[in-house]
Image (cartoon, rainbow, N blue to C red):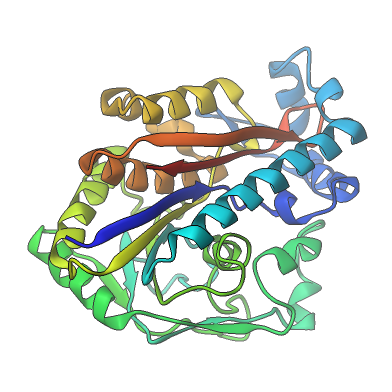
Length: 335
């Protein structure tokens, strides 16, 4: 079995790369959004304010935003330091695509990237002009201004693919991150943020592993997600025993409507290795961008299978409006 030298989970939301005095730009977009998901139901902004009284005015002040931003940076620095110390030979990254590279032509439920190179391409200026408010400022968080090309790990990817097929996971395979001139621009931000912030722009060879948590209709449910995590243990058993492997889950926690109660419920279940409690959360609670928590489910179930304990570095609910919109940030590692 390969050696697991580090396992980490981190949020990747744009607020992590946006100065807190500019968070208001996304709050303005929230006010126009007619479909805020919260516990399986949707609300417009005014309806969300009414549903969440007394509201979050005291948690979305400029001072609170700055405090939350600083706490997130300290947690990210901690994970980056731990990753640096782990010195893996290869990294497996569990993340998702938001129709950045996989479009209407094909989207796999589980996709393994086996390319020799992984481009991280800056958006062209004409594409930036079409972005929603408050998004352009955060681009630097997941893409270097000058772009980058990282090393893939095709041989490791081949073992992952063969093993998962043996375990009856009919995975999709990609060998190229396309740039179609319209929406796509290299590796999606869920992965780009990890390359930049956790691996500090100096990643070892890696294998991006996509789970389609957010794009209907072929979104795997929690039970299948956790079986996928268990299957990754067999993958590690088939990799060379002297290979040092790092593992990263990218995404979450609840957003763009923050639900601290749900977040603590999930983190508590993961820390206690209580998979029954993890499975008991209704699928409808993972609508909207909260779906990204499922990447944590993959890694958590894998770590349970190999007997590793989850440790939470920090949990930071980054509110940006009185309706409780924003991004709850989570940062964790296993040992």
